[in-house]
Image (cartoon, rainbow, N blue to C red):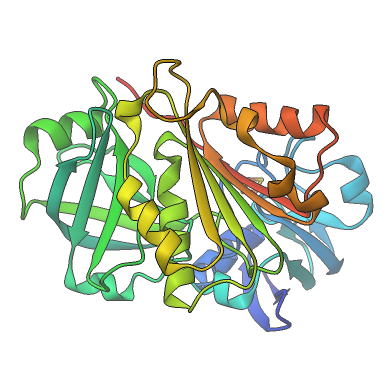
Length: 337
Ligand code: FES
């Protein structure tokens, strides 16, 4: 048995896919080359939340955080869990352009591994097929560690040459990827990449933007800023607060400075937890979020950092009754041994 599912996108485009048997909408969409926003695929994160306008389906398993009772009653479901039992119409919370990106495998070679600091590498990969790897600034890819069946996920850190992609990678002592990059990787080595992935990407800039980066969480913002420069700028101010633990963790400072020249309305601050830092702003990102950067709530906040930082910022906003038009975040945790 197969059911027809109409996917309606934010920009008004519609695409029909066929759900076979008890296939989920997300699986059918990806099989058809439509990359609707998903992340965990387990009914835990809510990234794939969509509104079902008509049709019968089984809701599947999920946690309350991903889909509340009230949302269910308003017609929302999780595309990674819902299995149609009849033809359906589903509103996808993304544009058709965003969903046309595909997660595919690309064979690349290591172009460069460079230590930017004691704690961070820059990795550049190249390959002729990379010109077909279209991604949205802020998305990530899976890098498959050679000689293993393991992979690690990293955000693209630039929108550079069509045959190259780059990443910022935290040096995790004992970590498989760190060990590979430190001890084994040589220019020309093969490395497989799959992607792009993720719902953390830059939306249209319709109001001021506040970007909050923790450590290598800077990477997606570098790609976003590259994109804004390439498209001729943004019509609203963009401020980035980049938080790290020590001065030695600060990377790509000159690149950020260059963005202040290349992108009108862009500014940034670095804040360092270490009290002995040479940088004037010490402490955590939340201590340096100024009222003028929140524009009375008329601001889109993007945050990429480790889970404690994401939770601290969310708590800071809530405790201080600070509002924003949107708050989009990406949590990451470096994998150790
Ligand atoms: Fe996380 Fe569906 S992708 S809930």
